[in-house]
Length: 207
Figure (cartoon, rainbow, N blue to C red):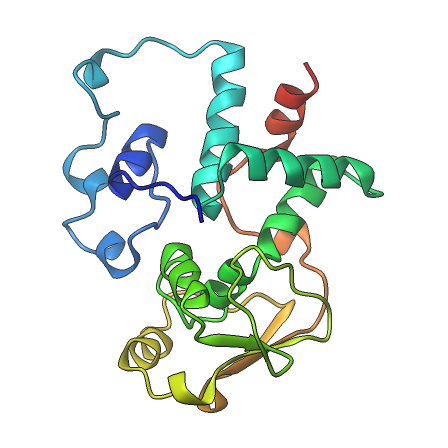
């Protein structure tokens, strides 16, 4: 399973904003953005102004890094978004939001999408009673995502639910006591609170 293996905090510094890739650490003074709010590398403090292409590229990289997908996966989602009815940029974000690792994070079971990806890959979750170990699995309306019986007592999950760092979006419903959530509908653009201008991504791929 391919994934980014370098330091996660470098990605936040490169984009100049918190991408919340490290869970609880991002809310402390140890966050890289709090300590060194400039791009990584020898010339990080002396980078010039971005060109229009550079601005579009940064938006694409930001979206990829927030959801933890690689280039080939991202292009696949974009191709699907183009084939759907509606606005391509919004369709793209909706596909990314429906990934199982993101849903686990949105429900509050994981402190970050990165942790959600790991928990799914290790077999801690099931969808409609069936174990799913594929983080990129796209949930559908009406499906139930829940911890497996052998995983419900994990201290990490209890800590994440008690922390309550983020509000569960309207298209999802969580039952904390039973460690399960239900997909109530399709995500809407106003429910996707991420700092990405998806139209710039569409312009980049349209060249």
